[in-house]
Image (cartoon, rainbow, N blue to C red; front, side, top):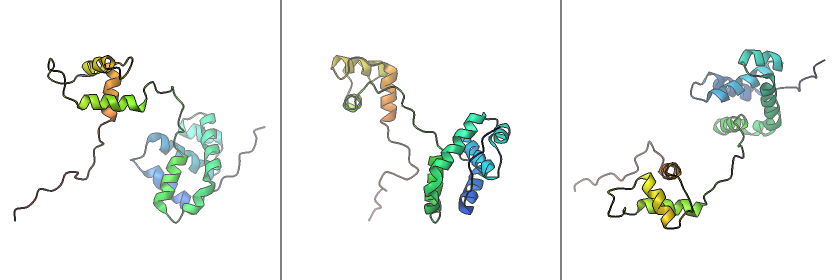
Length: 175
């Protein structure tokens, strides 16, 4: 016989927020699936039924049911602040960080590489390329070894993010 599922009870504000999220087209698909899991569990559905309805395996449904139950304790304190509640729910239903492999380069090395890219290139080349930056960084002892693709990743991550706001000053009007 299957073991009984833990009780599940959303507050009206949580239910309202989750239903709004389930209709939202701008959230990641994975978040929308997790919202559907929580709403279905709140409606009394078992993991098997939710699994069939969402196309996810039962273990995944059980995982998100468990994570919601473990993390929902402080949500009722945020119910008067809809923006904070939405962020907290999104964080609760987000993927946890995975450890991955440790970084090969230290922050100082990356900063020195970015500074190198800001310098004028040697006279024999017209502009920096990723292979040329990698070769020069090794020659100058910034790093022992680095691939041109790693140089490209660091250069891309060092760019300022696009902003919808104007970042330059308005031109002065004559007067």
